[in-house]
Length: 479
Image (cartoon, rainbow, N blue to C red; front, side, top):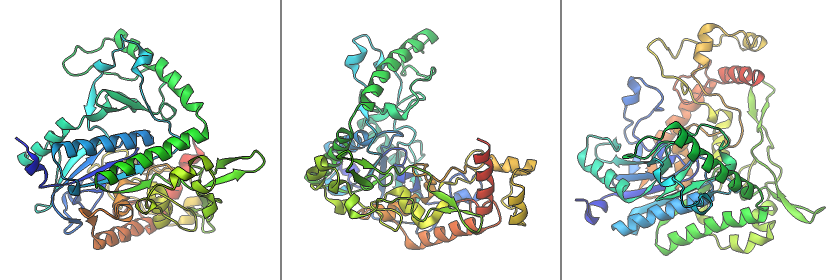
């Protein structure tokens, strides 16, 4: 039987966010990306993590969700830990606030009527981006929920049994806290026909007619929710966004919980007054931020954003939220400021530190096979390569299709392996876990070795800039 004494032998790190809220993916003892399915995958990196005690990492993030989910999920989970007897000094919370425009709301059962069958839908607890893991300090071992370590495993399952958070098992992004379902209709393709809904364990599987009927009921509900979300005024969306940040901070302070905030990217700057209409607007920051350099390689724009001064901060432009925003303790909100951005978040920091190749994922779209060799492909002449960009051999096509080479756009999800830098940069008040500077220095060296190499990828962290340019151009030209 798990008791308070058992729980307080651990330190708890609770994190939440949208699809960017995946700092927990960097919490392991290995020195290479997990997608490299070779012998090096089992190589422990000594002294990678600086741990105070054994750590329970609880990740609550759900793709596409907005500030309502981030606030509700972390307050709920933290409150449950306190109710279970975990001491406040053993808890640290980290929130990645997503885009202010996301009008996340709960699915209103009143709209569906008394005969709705939402309670029959299968819900997977701690699913997809969500997870609970334990970092064993003495053994330098990461414990998953199906681990052979019975004591750590029992702790994980005790927490899962007592924190009722998950996702509906379907191809829509629907987060759950208890029986309450959260959705951001502007962010998901709710209009598609097949949601792949499943009945919960213990019930007979839905037949096609029943599944279609539930899907249609939800689609009609989502259609109305989508209409309402899109009718929300800027002031209303911003007021909600600031409210959720403030109420979350207030909860932490009232309960003596240590915490830090960051954001997906710049959200609280970039505002300007539209004097012609007597109102305000926001400089959208999810546009393409790349351009071709003089050397023929893609680079970051020198000035991707124009509104990066203090006068563009939200509290200096949007009067309706100014007084409320000024109640927030910004010392806990770790912004990244640089020549390109002000009040930046995860995207801005990683781009500023590592340049354009942070979104690449080597070997992400297919498993590494025995016949795959890191050195198979090599660029002997950049000039000949760029003069004939579409002349791809079968070997090159096979290799190219195993990598993700996204457009360089804010919101395109940096490689999760780089989140070790995000943690040390933004979770500055976490005393339980940090990455060693020696580890970060070596990973930074390996990143630049990858990027500047004429090979596809030496270390599997990012792609050589020649191959990145070649495959990115090929993809963009053939969309």
